[in-house]
Length: 152
Length: 406
Image (cartoon, rainbow over all chains, first blue to last red; front, side, top):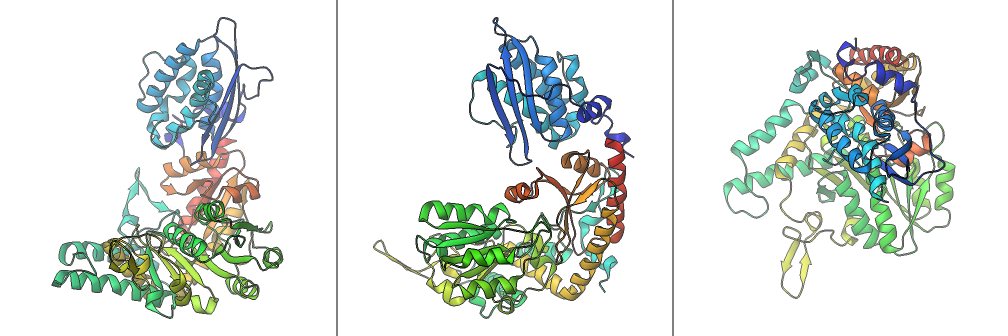
């Protein structure tokens, strides 16, 4: 019955949704931030441990939300490991292009399972919420950030 | 009995298909679809009979004023108001509640008094009272609900016992649980302690005949777009002597009897509360919607929806892993549920792919979500045009979604 949604709810998404690999709070971290989409109720909290060189050593998160936002956070943790803040922002930029348009020239392979999100306009903000929280953490933003209200 | 086939034929949108599948619209509690007479009345007004109202001396203005004021008569008859001047047009229920919070809350209530709301309010009946609390020194008290999703009447009465409560502002039917509140008993209790009562009837008036005098209410509000009418028009009804004692909400044209730079005098109700050019076309559309509902008849609507709700509770109750929130004795066609192993947003997306429209999220009732111990739910809500077959389709599809995610 749901063959037409297998692009979004593919094997990786369903497996990770059932059993996320990286959902945990970090006891020791350098920066943290929260993402909150009040219209839909999704929330995510992100913790980042930075290496001495300034690159991301470890990322942890806790998410309360749909399969798409949880799996997006889980895949994000893998994709950004070892990235500098600038490289992380560049990756988010190409990831955002992928979930908005379906096109991604230089996306991390690990983020490909979310490439069909662009066909589900109301779900784009689910996929980008954890990224907004991560970037906010790296930027030292203390206020909760959102991917609702027109800007994904 | 209602002629369901005939009613469905009156709603053009129900003939639409979504990705090749017939539209199964189960989101009427958010906003209902519009029957052809409503659409035609609005188009007719714009094509043949439109000008600004209450001020023109020409034929078009006079005729348009007449049509708009007929909407006021239709609302007065719909809720059995004693006096057509008691009907104030607003933008929606939110506009009505904000008007009341301002003009009654700040204009009539005194700092130190309290407002009682319940745990199962829509944000629109929470936030205006918080703003009143913060601006005017009014205490805000929250009447709890039981685990079944019914108002806890004993706890409610206890909140009123000190005599400080000036106003009870409470839903007449929960937009999440579908529970009705016992309106007559609420009024009896509130009045015994000297409090006035406002009902948010946004959901209730869609499903039940409302007689504000029989209920014993002091204020009642609802919105047009849930009652098969257009967006942009709502109603606040209040007892005449209460409205007369309230200062205006917004200032502007239409709400004055005279203006000089030194002072202005307010118009009589309802115009005192209707500043500016109102939603004229929408008023005319609301009248057509009320005429439509009255022609079908509330007895027939209530019987149809009671049967649908029973059917839905039985069918959904049999879906493995599905939990229905609330089990109120007196409930209507709004059912919130969760499905084990699937987030409500994912459920809604999969239902949507089958042409089934439901709402998912917190339903603008976050405090209630916390009370129920959930972050969000999926909600199916019924209208005059909903069929038992559509509910079967929902239940069957939910069963398959459950399998998909496990």
